[in-house]
Image (cartoon, rainbow, N blue to C red; front, top):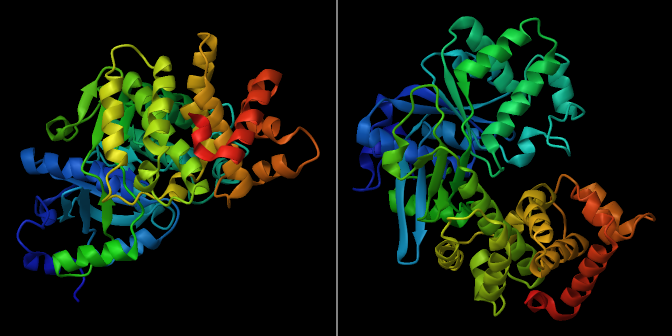
Length: 473
Protein backbone atom coordinates (compact mmCIF):
# COMPACT_ATOMS: atom_id res chain seq x y z
CA UNK A 1 0.00 0.00 0.00
CA UNK A 2 1.35 3.45 -0.94
CA UNK A 3 2.16 5.91 1.85
CA UNK A 4 0.04 9.00 2.51
CA UNK A 5 1.85 12.03 1.04
CA UNK A 6 1.37 14.93 -1.35
CA UNK A 7 1.86 12.45 -4.18
CA UNK A 8 -1.11 10.33 -3.10
CA UNK A 9 -3.51 13.14 -2.10
CA UNK A 10 -5.33 13.04 -5.43
CA UNK A 11 -6.36 9.43 -4.94
CA UNK A 12 -8.06 9.80 -1.56
CA UNK A 13 -11.75 8.89 -1.37
CA UNK A 14 -14.21 11.79 -1.62
CA UNK A 15 -14.60 13.67 1.63
CA UNK A 16 -11.41 12.36 3.23
CA UNK A 17 -8.88 14.94 1.98
CA UNK A 18 -7.62 18.12 3.67
CA UNK A 19 -9.94 21.12 3.81
CA UNK A 20 -7.33 23.21 1.96
CA UNK A 21 -4.45 22.38 -0.36
CA UNK A 22 -1.46 22.17 2.01
CA UNK A 23 0.89 23.24 -0.77
CA UNK A 24 -0.66 26.73 -0.71
CA UNK A 25 0.24 27.39 2.95
CA UNK A 26 2.99 29.62 4.28
CA UNK A 27 4.89 29.24 7.55
CA UNK A 28 3.04 31.43 10.05
CA UNK A 29 2.77 29.31 13.22
CA UNK A 30 5.42 27.43 15.18
CA UNK A 31 4.25 24.62 17.44
CA UNK A 32 6.43 23.15 20.21
CA UNK A 33 5.48 19.65 21.33
CA UNK A 34 4.33 17.83 18.21
CA UNK A 35 2.13 15.16 19.77
CA UNK A 36 -1.26 13.71 19.03
CA UNK A 37 -3.19 16.31 21.01
CA UNK A 38 -1.95 19.24 18.95
CA UNK A 39 -2.70 17.40 15.73
CA UNK A 40 -6.23 16.61 16.90
CA UNK A 41 -6.96 20.04 18.36
CA UNK A 42 -5.12 23.28 17.51
CA UNK A 43 -4.06 22.11 14.03
CA UNK A 44 -7.66 21.20 13.22
CA UNK A 45 -9.03 24.54 14.42
CA UNK A 46 -6.34 26.27 12.33
CA UNK A 47 -7.21 24.26 9.22
CA UNK A 48 -10.89 25.08 9.64
CA UNK A 49 -10.08 28.79 9.99
CA UNK A 50 -7.89 28.58 6.91
CA UNK A 51 -10.69 26.97 4.92
CA UNK A 52 -13.08 29.76 5.96
CA UNK A 53 -10.83 32.81 5.64
CA UNK A 54 -7.45 31.92 4.16
CA UNK A 55 -4.29 33.58 5.41
CA UNK A 56 -1.79 30.81 4.66
CA UNK A 57 -1.61 29.63 8.29
CA UNK A 58 0.85 26.77 7.86
CA UNK A 59 2.32 25.21 11.01
CA UNK A 60 5.88 24.03 11.54
CA UNK A 61 5.78 21.45 14.31
CA UNK A 62 8.76 20.67 16.52
CA UNK A 63 9.01 17.50 18.57
CA UNK A 64 10.61 18.13 21.96
CA UNK A 65 11.67 14.66 23.03
CA UNK A 66 11.38 11.52 20.90
CA UNK A 67 11.99 11.51 17.18
CA UNK A 68 9.38 8.91 16.24
CA UNK A 69 6.69 11.47 15.40
CA UNK A 70 9.08 13.22 13.00
CA UNK A 71 10.06 9.88 11.48
CA UNK A 72 6.37 9.07 10.96
CA UNK A 73 5.28 12.44 9.58
CA UNK A 74 8.25 13.52 7.44
CA UNK A 75 7.79 10.81 4.76
CA UNK A 76 4.12 11.84 4.63
CA UNK A 77 4.89 15.54 3.99
CA UNK A 78 3.33 16.33 7.36
CA UNK A 79 -0.02 14.79 6.39
CA UNK A 80 -1.95 12.62 8.85
CA UNK A 81 -5.49 11.47 9.39
CA UNK A 82 -7.82 12.31 12.24
CA UNK A 83 -10.54 9.81 13.10
CA UNK A 84 -13.35 11.15 15.25
CA UNK A 85 -14.98 8.33 17.14
CA UNK A 86 -18.67 9.03 17.67
CA UNK A 87 -21.16 6.50 19.05
CA UNK A 88 -22.78 6.31 15.61
CA UNK A 89 -19.50 5.41 13.96
CA UNK A 90 -16.03 6.79 13.09
CA UNK A 91 -15.28 9.58 10.60
CA UNK A 92 -11.78 9.77 9.09
CA UNK A 93 -10.15 12.52 7.03
CA UNK A 94 -6.67 13.89 6.34
CA UNK A 95 -5.40 17.10 7.95
CA UNK A 96 -2.78 19.05 6.00
CA UNK A 97 -1.89 22.08 8.11
CA UNK A 98 1.66 20.96 9.00
CA UNK A 99 4.09 22.39 6.46
CA UNK A 100 7.21 21.02 8.18
CA UNK A 101 7.99 18.58 10.97
CA UNK A 102 11.23 18.99 12.89
CA UNK A 103 13.02 18.11 16.13
CA UNK A 104 13.71 21.06 18.43
CA UNK A 105 17.27 19.97 19.24
CA UNK A 106 18.30 18.43 15.92
CA UNK A 107 16.89 21.42 14.03
CA UNK A 108 17.70 24.13 16.57
CA UNK A 109 18.88 26.60 13.93
CA UNK A 110 15.61 26.27 12.02
CA UNK A 111 13.64 26.79 15.23
CA UNK A 112 15.64 29.89 16.13
CA UNK A 113 15.17 31.36 12.65
CA UNK A 114 11.44 30.73 12.69
CA UNK A 115 10.98 32.23 16.14
CA UNK A 116 12.77 35.33 14.86
CA UNK A 117 10.83 35.54 11.58
CA UNK A 118 8.25 38.37 11.40
CA UNK A 119 6.19 36.07 9.17
CA UNK A 120 5.61 33.87 12.22
CA UNK A 121 3.13 35.58 14.53
CA UNK A 122 1.95 32.67 16.68
CA UNK A 123 3.78 30.06 18.79
CA UNK A 124 1.67 27.33 20.38
CA UNK A 125 2.89 24.76 22.89
CA UNK A 126 1.78 21.36 24.17
CA UNK A 127 4.68 19.96 26.19
CA UNK A 128 2.74 18.69 29.26
CA UNK A 129 3.05 20.20 32.73
CA UNK A 130 6.41 18.60 33.40
CA UNK A 131 7.84 19.90 30.12
CA UNK A 132 8.03 23.41 31.58
CA UNK A 133 10.37 22.15 34.33
CA UNK A 134 8.96 23.97 37.30
CA UNK A 135 10.17 23.63 40.87
CA UNK A 136 7.79 22.72 43.68
CA UNK A 137 6.97 26.41 44.25
CA UNK A 138 6.09 26.90 40.58
CA UNK A 139 9.23 28.80 39.62
CA UNK A 140 11.70 27.69 36.97
CA UNK A 141 13.69 24.75 38.32
CA UNK A 142 17.22 26.00 37.78
CA UNK A 143 18.49 22.82 39.46
CA UNK A 144 16.97 20.68 36.73
CA UNK A 145 19.97 19.28 34.78
CA UNK A 146 18.66 20.38 31.38
CA UNK A 147 17.70 23.86 32.59
CA UNK A 148 21.07 24.22 34.30
CA UNK A 149 22.86 23.12 31.13
CA UNK A 150 20.89 25.62 29.04
CA UNK A 151 21.73 28.44 31.46
CA UNK A 152 25.39 27.39 31.41
CA UNK A 153 25.47 27.98 27.65
CA UNK A 154 24.70 24.61 26.09
CA UNK A 155 25.27 24.86 22.31
CA UNK A 156 21.63 23.95 21.64
CA UNK A 157 18.76 24.77 24.03
CA UNK A 158 17.15 21.53 25.21
CA UNK A 159 14.20 22.91 27.19
CA UNK A 160 11.13 24.66 25.83
CA UNK A 161 11.58 27.66 28.14
CA UNK A 162 15.15 28.14 26.94
CA UNK A 163 14.09 27.72 23.30
CA UNK A 164 11.48 30.45 23.73
CA UNK A 165 13.90 32.76 25.54
CA UNK A 166 16.62 32.37 22.91
CA UNK A 167 14.12 32.76 20.08
CA UNK A 168 12.63 35.90 21.57
CA UNK A 169 16.09 37.36 22.11
CA UNK A 170 16.93 36.85 18.44
CA UNK A 171 13.55 38.22 17.36
CA UNK A 172 14.02 41.44 19.31
CA UNK A 173 17.43 42.01 17.74
CA UNK A 174 16.48 41.14 14.17
CA UNK A 175 12.92 42.35 13.60
CA UNK A 176 11.28 43.33 16.86
CA UNK A 177 8.00 42.08 15.42
CA UNK A 178 5.25 41.29 17.95
CA UNK A 179 4.47 37.67 18.76
CA UNK A 180 1.84 35.73 20.70
CA UNK A 181 2.95 32.63 22.63
CA UNK A 182 -0.11 30.45 23.26
CA UNK A 183 0.40 27.62 25.80
CA UNK A 184 -2.16 24.83 25.38
CA UNK A 185 -1.32 22.54 28.29
CA UNK A 186 -3.59 21.70 31.21
CA UNK A 187 -2.11 24.14 33.70
CA UNK A 188 -4.05 26.76 35.61
CA UNK A 189 -3.31 30.24 34.20
CA UNK A 190 -0.95 28.65 31.70
CA UNK A 191 -0.14 31.86 29.82
CA UNK A 192 0.93 33.70 32.96
CA UNK A 193 2.92 30.65 34.09
CA UNK A 194 4.87 30.39 30.83
CA UNK A 195 5.47 34.15 30.68
CA UNK A 196 6.91 34.03 34.20
CA UNK A 197 9.11 31.02 33.44
CA UNK A 198 10.55 32.60 30.30
CA UNK A 199 11.14 35.82 32.21
CA UNK A 200 12.90 33.92 35.00
CA UNK A 201 15.11 32.21 32.45
CA UNK A 202 16.07 35.56 30.93
CA UNK A 203 16.79 37.01 34.37
CA UNK A 204 19.02 34.04 35.21
CA UNK A 205 20.77 34.01 31.84
CA UNK A 206 23.39 36.65 32.54
CA UNK A 207 22.82 38.13 29.07
CA UNK A 208 24.01 41.72 28.80
CA UNK A 209 20.75 42.69 27.05
CA UNK A 210 18.43 40.88 29.44
CA UNK A 211 16.81 44.05 30.81
CA UNK A 212 16.14 45.32 27.31
CA UNK A 213 14.74 41.93 26.33
CA UNK A 214 12.40 41.80 29.32
CA UNK A 215 11.15 45.32 28.59
CA UNK A 216 10.51 44.44 24.94
CA UNK A 217 8.70 41.25 25.92
CA UNK A 218 6.42 43.26 28.19
CA UNK A 219 5.29 45.36 25.21
CA UNK A 220 5.56 43.07 22.19
CA UNK A 221 4.98 39.49 23.35
CA UNK A 222 1.62 38.21 24.59
CA UNK A 223 1.17 35.01 26.57
CA UNK A 224 -2.62 34.44 26.47
CA UNK A 225 -3.94 31.78 28.81
CA UNK A 226 -6.07 29.04 27.30
CA UNK A 227 -8.32 26.13 28.10
CA UNK A 228 -8.17 23.16 25.74
CA UNK A 229 -10.30 20.06 25.70
CA UNK A 230 -10.61 17.06 23.44
CA UNK A 231 -10.04 13.47 24.50
CA UNK A 232 -7.22 12.09 22.33
CA UNK A 233 -6.29 8.50 23.21
CA UNK A 234 -2.95 7.00 22.28
CA UNK A 235 -3.08 5.63 18.74
CA UNK A 236 -2.78 1.86 18.41
CA UNK A 237 -1.63 -0.29 15.49
CA UNK A 238 -5.27 -1.22 14.94
CA UNK A 239 -6.17 2.48 14.72
CA UNK A 240 -3.52 3.01 12.05
CA UNK A 241 -4.73 -0.01 10.13
CA UNK A 242 -8.34 1.18 10.26
CA UNK A 243 -7.46 4.70 9.07
CA UNK A 244 -5.31 3.32 6.26
CA UNK A 245 -8.15 1.08 5.12
CA UNK A 246 -10.49 4.08 4.87
CA UNK A 247 -7.97 6.21 2.99
CA UNK A 248 -6.61 3.52 0.68
CA UNK A 249 -3.05 4.63 1.54
CA UNK A 250 -0.85 3.85 4.53
CA UNK A 251 -0.95 6.41 7.35
CA UNK A 252 1.66 5.83 10.06
CA UNK A 253 0.71 9.08 11.84
CA UNK A 254 -3.01 8.60 12.39
CA UNK A 255 -4.59 10.22 15.45
CA UNK A 256 -7.87 9.49 17.18
CA UNK A 257 -10.20 11.87 18.97
CA UNK A 258 -13.69 12.36 20.27
CA UNK A 259 -16.17 14.61 18.42
CA UNK A 260 -16.21 17.18 21.25
CA UNK A 261 -13.64 19.97 21.21
CA UNK A 262 -13.25 23.12 23.31
CA UNK A 263 -10.78 25.98 23.05
CA UNK A 264 -11.08 29.05 25.27
CA UNK A 265 -8.47 31.78 24.73
CA UNK A 266 -7.68 34.97 26.59
CA UNK A 267 -8.11 37.81 24.11
CA UNK A 268 -4.72 39.47 24.60
CA UNK A 269 -2.97 38.74 21.30
CA UNK A 270 -0.35 41.23 20.08
CA UNK A 271 0.00 39.93 16.51
CA UNK A 272 -2.07 38.57 13.63
CA UNK A 273 -3.81 35.24 14.23
CA UNK A 274 -6.21 32.84 12.50
CA UNK A 275 -9.90 33.53 13.03
CA UNK A 276 -10.30 30.60 15.39
CA UNK A 277 -13.50 32.09 16.81
CA UNK A 278 -15.27 31.00 13.62
CA UNK A 279 -14.28 27.38 14.31
CA UNK A 280 -15.95 27.26 17.72
CA UNK A 281 -13.12 28.73 19.81
CA UNK A 282 -14.17 31.21 22.48
CA UNK A 283 -12.22 34.45 23.10
CA UNK A 284 -12.78 35.91 26.56
CA UNK A 285 -11.13 38.50 28.83
CA UNK A 286 -10.47 35.88 31.53
CA UNK A 287 -10.25 32.12 31.00
CA UNK A 288 -9.94 31.35 34.72
CA UNK A 289 -13.54 30.21 35.35
CA UNK A 290 -13.44 27.83 32.38
CA UNK A 291 -9.98 26.65 33.34
CA UNK A 292 -10.92 25.89 36.92
CA UNK A 293 -14.03 23.98 35.88
CA UNK A 294 -12.17 21.92 33.29
CA UNK A 295 -9.15 21.14 35.47
CA UNK A 296 -11.15 20.24 38.55
CA UNK A 297 -14.10 18.45 36.94
CA UNK A 298 -12.91 16.81 33.72
CA UNK A 299 -9.21 16.35 34.44
CA UNK A 300 -9.77 15.67 38.13
CA UNK A 301 -12.45 13.07 37.37
CA UNK A 302 -10.16 11.46 34.79
CA UNK A 303 -7.42 11.05 37.37
CA UNK A 304 -9.86 9.59 39.90
CA UNK A 305 -11.39 7.15 37.42
CA UNK A 306 -7.91 6.04 36.33
CA UNK A 307 -6.81 5.25 39.90
CA UNK A 308 -10.03 3.42 40.72
CA UNK A 309 -10.45 1.75 37.34
CA UNK A 310 -6.99 0.23 37.03
CA UNK A 311 -7.38 -1.35 40.46
CA UNK A 312 -10.80 -2.68 39.38
CA UNK A 313 -9.42 -4.33 36.24
CA UNK A 314 -10.82 -1.73 33.82
CA UNK A 315 -8.84 -0.67 30.76
CA UNK A 316 -10.49 2.52 29.50
CA UNK A 317 -12.60 5.41 30.74
CA UNK A 318 -15.63 3.96 28.95
CA UNK A 319 -14.98 0.61 30.68
CA UNK A 320 -14.90 2.38 34.04
CA UNK A 321 -18.19 4.11 33.27
CA UNK A 322 -19.87 0.73 32.70
CA UNK A 323 -18.97 -0.31 36.26
CA UNK A 324 -21.73 -0.01 38.87
CA UNK A 325 -19.61 2.59 40.64
CA UNK A 326 -18.57 4.58 37.53
CA UNK A 327 -21.24 7.24 37.04
CA UNK A 328 -22.14 7.48 40.77
CA UNK A 329 -18.50 8.16 41.69
CA UNK A 330 -18.16 10.74 38.90
CA UNK A 331 -21.29 12.58 40.00
CA UNK A 332 -20.39 12.42 43.70
CA UNK A 333 -16.94 13.80 42.94
CA UNK A 334 -18.39 16.58 40.77
CA UNK A 335 -21.00 17.51 43.38
CA UNK A 336 -18.31 17.97 46.00
CA UNK A 337 -15.88 19.86 43.77
CA UNK A 338 -18.67 22.14 42.50
CA UNK A 339 -18.49 23.93 45.84
CA UNK A 340 -15.06 25.28 44.84
CA UNK A 341 -16.03 26.60 41.39
CA UNK A 342 -16.71 30.22 40.40
CA UNK A 343 -20.32 31.35 40.27
CA UNK A 344 -22.14 31.58 36.96
CA UNK A 345 -20.95 28.33 35.39
CA UNK A 346 -23.37 25.68 34.13
CA UNK A 347 -21.87 22.94 36.26
CA UNK A 348 -24.86 20.61 35.97
CA UNK A 349 -24.82 20.76 32.18
CA UNK A 350 -21.05 20.33 32.10
CA UNK A 351 -21.21 17.21 34.28
CA UNK A 352 -24.02 15.74 32.16
CA UNK A 353 -21.77 16.28 29.15
CA UNK A 354 -18.87 14.55 30.90
CA UNK A 355 -21.02 11.50 31.58
CA UNK A 356 -21.89 11.27 27.87
CA UNK A 357 -18.32 11.85 26.73
CA UNK A 358 -16.76 9.44 29.21
CA UNK A 359 -19.34 6.77 28.35
CA UNK A 360 -18.67 6.91 24.58
CA UNK A 361 -17.93 3.24 23.76
CA UNK A 362 -16.12 4.22 20.57
CA UNK A 363 -13.33 5.82 22.59
CA UNK A 364 -10.53 3.76 24.10
CA UNK A 365 -8.91 6.31 26.40
CA UNK A 366 -6.66 4.07 28.44
CA UNK A 367 -6.71 4.51 32.19
CA UNK A 368 -3.02 3.69 32.56
CA UNK A 369 -2.19 6.49 30.11
CA UNK A 370 -4.29 8.94 32.13
CA UNK A 371 -2.67 7.84 35.39
CA UNK A 372 0.85 8.83 34.27
CA UNK A 373 2.53 11.81 35.96
CA UNK A 374 -0.28 11.99 38.53
CA UNK A 375 1.89 13.60 41.19
CA UNK A 376 2.25 16.60 38.86
CA UNK A 377 -1.50 16.86 38.23
CA UNK A 378 -3.13 16.25 41.61
CA UNK A 379 -2.11 19.56 43.28
CA UNK A 380 -4.15 21.60 40.79
CA UNK A 381 -6.92 19.07 40.22
CA UNK A 382 -7.62 17.87 43.78
CA UNK A 383 -5.65 19.73 46.41
CA UNK A 384 -6.69 23.23 45.36
CA UNK A 385 -10.45 22.50 45.59
CA UNK A 386 -9.94 20.44 48.74
CA UNK A 387 -8.31 23.34 50.55
CA UNK A 388 -11.00 25.77 49.42
CA UNK A 389 -13.75 23.42 50.57
CA UNK A 390 -12.01 22.96 53.92
CA UNK A 391 -11.74 26.73 54.40
CA UNK A 392 -15.46 27.04 53.67
CA UNK A 393 -16.14 24.52 56.42
CA UNK A 394 -17.69 21.90 54.17
CA UNK A 395 -16.85 18.17 54.15
CA UNK A 396 -14.52 16.85 51.46
CA UNK A 397 -15.01 13.11 51.85
CA UNK A 398 -14.81 12.25 48.14
CA UNK A 399 -11.58 14.21 47.64
CA UNK A 400 -10.12 12.55 50.72
CA UNK A 401 -11.09 9.22 49.19
CA UNK A 402 -9.57 10.28 45.86
CA UNK A 403 -6.21 10.88 47.54
CA UNK A 404 -6.48 7.45 49.15
CA UNK A 405 -7.24 5.93 45.72
CA UNK A 406 -4.13 7.55 44.27
CA UNK A 407 -2.04 6.30 47.18
CA UNK A 408 -3.34 2.76 46.69
CA UNK A 409 -2.54 3.05 42.99
CA UNK A 410 1.05 4.10 43.74
CA UNK A 411 1.38 1.19 46.17
CA UNK A 412 -0.02 -1.53 43.89
CA UNK A 413 0.74 -0.48 40.29
CA UNK A 414 3.86 0.19 38.18
CA UNK A 415 4.65 3.90 38.25
CA UNK A 416 5.21 6.26 35.32
CA UNK A 417 5.76 9.46 37.25
CA UNK A 418 8.59 12.00 37.65
CA UNK A 419 8.33 11.50 41.42
CA UNK A 420 8.40 7.69 41.25
CA UNK A 421 11.52 7.35 43.42
CA UNK A 422 10.10 9.61 46.12
CA UNK A 423 6.77 7.79 46.00
CA UNK A 424 8.44 4.41 46.45
CA UNK A 425 10.53 5.83 49.30
CA UNK A 426 7.34 6.98 51.03
CA UNK A 427 6.07 3.41 51.00
CA UNK A 428 9.34 1.74 52.00
CA UNK A 429 11.20 4.37 54.01
CA UNK A 430 11.72 4.39 57.74
CA UNK A 431 10.59 7.99 58.28
CA UNK A 432 7.04 9.34 58.18
CA UNK A 433 4.35 6.75 57.63
CA UNK A 434 3.24 6.46 53.96
CA UNK A 435 0.24 8.80 53.99
CA UNK A 436 2.28 11.69 55.38
CA UNK A 437 5.14 10.95 53.03
CA UNK A 438 2.91 10.81 49.97
CA UNK A 439 1.16 14.05 50.87
CA UNK A 440 4.60 15.63 51.15
CA UNK A 441 5.48 14.33 47.67
CA UNK A 442 2.40 16.20 46.43
CA UNK A 443 3.69 19.40 48.04
CA UNK A 444 0.99 19.26 50.73
CA UNK A 445 3.09 19.55 53.87
CA UNK A 446 0.22 21.36 55.55
CA UNK A 447 -2.06 18.36 55.04
CA UNK A 448 0.72 15.96 56.04
CA UNK A 449 1.00 17.81 59.36
CA UNK A 450 -2.77 17.63 59.95
CA UNK A 451 -3.24 14.54 62.12
CA UNK A 452 -7.01 14.43 61.61
CA UNK A 453 -6.67 14.64 57.84
CA UNK A 454 -3.98 11.96 57.73
CA UNK A 455 -6.20 9.70 59.82
CA UNK A 456 -9.13 10.32 57.45
CA UNK A 457 -7.04 9.43 54.38
CA UNK A 458 -5.71 6.33 56.12
CA UNK A 459 -9.26 5.23 56.92
CA UNK A 460 -10.39 5.76 53.33
CA UNK A 461 -7.40 3.76 52.12
CA UNK A 462 -8.43 0.86 54.37
CA UNK A 463 -12.02 1.15 53.13
CA UNK A 464 -10.87 1.03 49.51
CA UNK A 465 -8.82 -2.07 50.23
CA UNK A 466 -11.88 -3.71 51.80
CA UNK A 467 -14.72 -2.50 49.57
CA UNK A 468 -13.22 -1.22 46.32
CA UNK A 469 -14.45 1.95 44.54
CA UNK A 470 -17.85 1.84 46.25
CA UNK A 471 -16.04 3.04 49.39
CA UNK A 472 -16.09 6.53 47.89
CA UNK A 473 -19.90 6.65 47.80
